[in-house]
Length: 395
Image 1: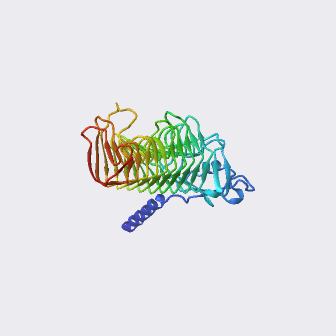
Image 2: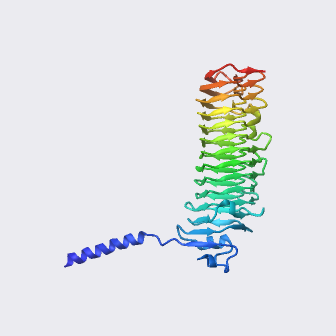
Image 3: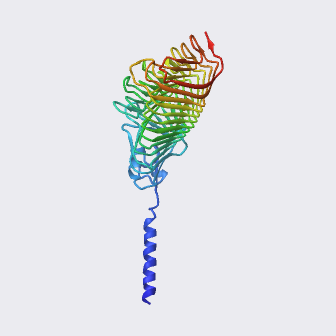
């Protein structure tokens, strides 16, 4: 009898542990500007009129804030600090979060939080980062159009700090304003974020990274980066700028422009892999890609890019300050074709100092330059070239 009681007690204890581990049922909260009653948000008939009120009551993991069609004008940033989902009913074309030019639109600081299906516009981060959305320590933005936002410093559209994720989004016509530290006109990724399957177009940075800047690690993949501008005189990375690490892979990078690295610029570490880099332009060097210090470009097509001075396709080093130290960079297994520059239409090694660069197993042809069409070296004997070179055109 005692053994039966002990078994029953043990069974009840185990059931209690299992049941206690099951979270409470997630709630759905509703937002509609024209609902008959403003709250408590449990149904459409009493939906909240503004998004923040619904977010404030969505405190349990898995709660959903469901927002119906309309434009939601902000007077202060929308703060999402719990692991909840903010989702529109009909998607970005029909549901707008508008900063009205006076405030950042969204601050997201919960690792499992999700923003899904909004048009985010009119955000302004004065003296700060992230005009449209600031992702702090995780969280995901998906199926959103982030358009026409501004920040003084980093991330005109989105600033992604530490492990945030941006996927299936359009990041369009955003700006950073500072000419000395305005980086990532469309998006700035800082520490290990992910940008996947996005369109990054028509953005402008006050200094570097017109479309996107990735710094201290992070990944851009399966995306289109087109028609962005790094606007400063010596701004670098019109489309993509990698600094101190980062990876861009399986992307199309086209029609971007900058002073240095019209398509992309790698500074002190970073990898560009399996990308198509076409029809970009630079004022000084690196019409397609510029490598400054360490970097790797591999399995890419670099075509129809232009630099007014040096390295129409790819440049190693900078044409601006020859006192900077340069280290090992490499271009491997690439097709470099139909690029244009005054010197080194295809590839340029510069300057004539500590520059250890390698071009390995590449095919380079139909590039044009005033002096040397294919590969020009103004660097030390440390530069190494192992390529397949088909005769180039010299004008």
